[in-house]
Length: 341
Image (tube, rainbow, N blue to C red; front, side, top):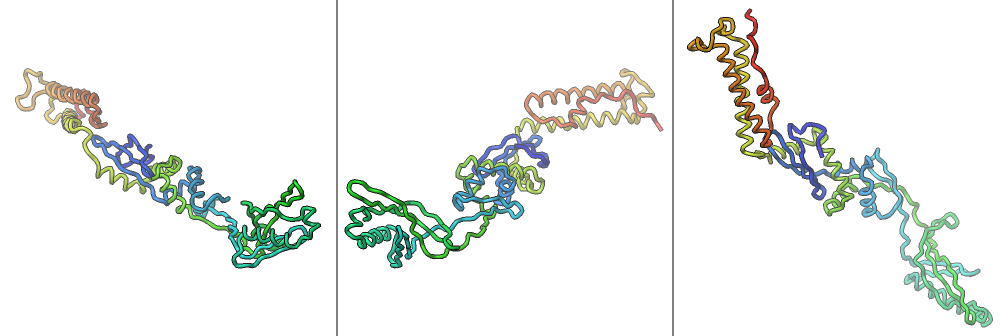
């Protein structure tokens, strides 16, 4: 994990998924820190809307509304679906068996009760000859099948009963529809906000779902990529910051001091305020107060040599070397001063 936009000098070195959050480790100069990036439902919903975590989305939808057909409505940050009304046990059942229609409106009616009642009703009306020819029902079993059908322009809830008739040693079974002669409401479009689904995804991620963690981790990355959203993360990094290594702090401080000294000496040679270059003096005959041009060059190289040694030590110990320090550890002294005006 990284950040597209600068985190005010912090560079992410490691990221670890922790439930619905992502823990990042970061470094800045001699400081190290860590921050927990926790996306909210709105931020996770953006990931779902973009289609980057389809499995997590499908699982959450199934948990919330069951296995139904749905489509994404990204313009309104929601999904749209239709859900058939579930046929409920009611107290009015009718069946057409052969050419006879039988209905029961008893308030105690249940599916199994109705099947047994119709079996008794049918058998009680049979003649001896009809019984002999196998018209009597010997068993009635309610199946698990239910559906909704249109009958004469009306929607009906139906279940099915298997009736078995017997003639001698042979039997014959057939399934018959039992319908509820009532109108059911038309199925209308329903919607579910992506933020509601995102909350379920976050819950799943906290519970350890790897599919859900894909969505929350992408959301965390999006936070780091947005300068405004990343501000709380940067603040947490600053609050949690500590020295990477106390030795580095001392080395870096000394390198900065020496680099400043080298820069000062370089500018002093360029200006040559005492005309040491033009009024050349050997080191032996150096001015008692201003020394000589060659003497200043020797001191420049001496301080710079100490700085170079510290840079090498810093690199070996894994300490940060700034661009400023590198410049003055490599800058040669001027060959001559600037022209006098």
